[in-house]
Length: 333
Image (cartoon, rainbow, N blue to C red; front, side, top):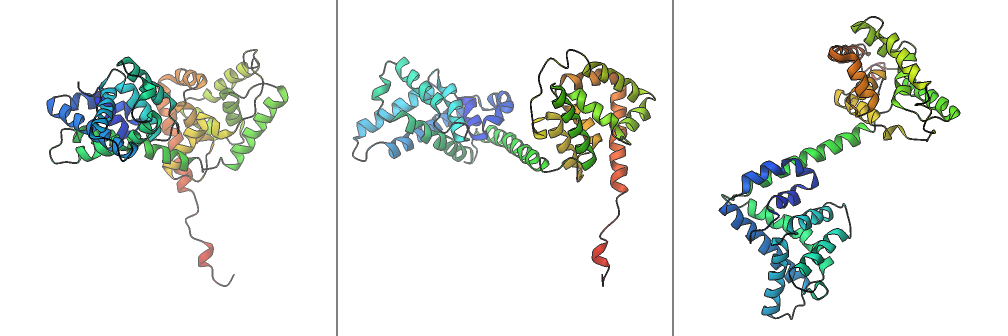
């Protein structure tokens, strides 16, 4: 029987974040040469696991029996689920990986064996396979003319991109909210806390619109005169309604809010030193909130223009900075 985790092996190497590529990967690696290569990977991982985990004085028959059983489980109905669970251990999602252990026991029992007498301790085997399956797959994919090369490379590239995205988010989280914006938002949050109502996206937008010299107001009115006033009116109707007061206030960190995380990513990508009201407006557009969707609907065909004006304003602010350096050129101070 061919290893049922055909596509999952690429997932093991690429990690859980490679799932988006799996459908195409599956089409790439189906076929007799790929099946033989996957069987070779499975057998090599099973043999290495047995060598590491069985007693040194085990007989050849017992060794072969352990390897055959390991392969039989990977080749069985639960093979793909087990490979997915093993992936979690390989990438630190679950240190003990109880899910994979339980799946393994069920697979052994399904095949008519007793899981309690499996020749290799199942938890140790799962941990070991989490390391050896990716190693053997990479080794096989790296051989000349391997039918697995394209599939494994694609899965790895997907995962590399995901890791880079994670790093970008981590770096973006270091970008602070600008002083004026943070002060305005803190006042809005304090108001919600006093009134014992939850802080929602409408409260954020109102704070941005009420900010002294707000670039959000200028941006909206640049696209459509009076648009900022109309938006403020609609937002006030909501925050003063029963719906806005239906949930009690709960303290939170700004990093927990999706629109802030997206705004920080925008600022980081542009090289801006702080998150302003315009970054936050763009973050609201990109976040998956009800208010963001309704705002997008309200703007309709004007959304693109609002984005362009906001970005143009950010560019103009960047160009308006004092060209440096300054103080290090002034000797004798």
